[in-house]
Length: 200
Ligand code: ZN
Image (cartoon, rainbow, N blue to C red; front, side, top):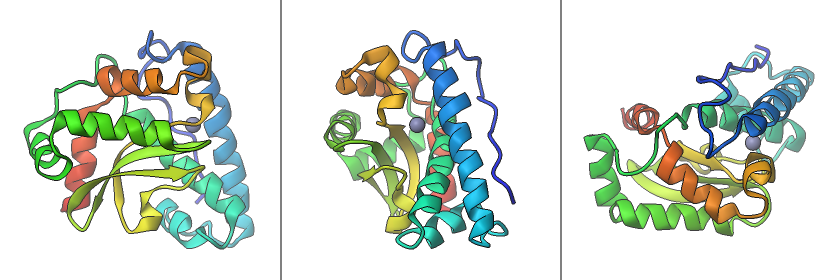
């Protein structure tokens, strides 16, 4: 099945001032679209276009870097748009998720510090994550288009630390962008939805 670019689940202005309309226009309409177009073409060339996106990501890892990076980025961005919302972020975690953060990640403040640190210390382009591995939450970071699926884990929250995600709004201040993501943008309801699916 060919990859398709999903619509943003909110207006281009919805995340301002933390993420501008201009950033979302470039990031969604140009960068994500390029992953969709290139990934579709490369998946067809590899004879993998009958597989699910998750299968393409895990099966191309370490074997077909061009396809892997585009398919991985398509997967990552599909969720990234849904991991944000207007007036999101902060401590408003649904109860079940708050309990898991308390027991597995040392509580909200520890999660916030470790998640931001993972994003700050991801050298170059990549992602920081909360993933479920062996039934427990873990903070992870990965380079380029990689994600926790290839490490036997299921991502439930990810933040894009490619410069295309923050350079227009924050220039080189990646830590400020990560703080704004956690404090003002995270859609905890969608994180819960992925947590429940990952632990079902
Ligand atoms: Zn991106």
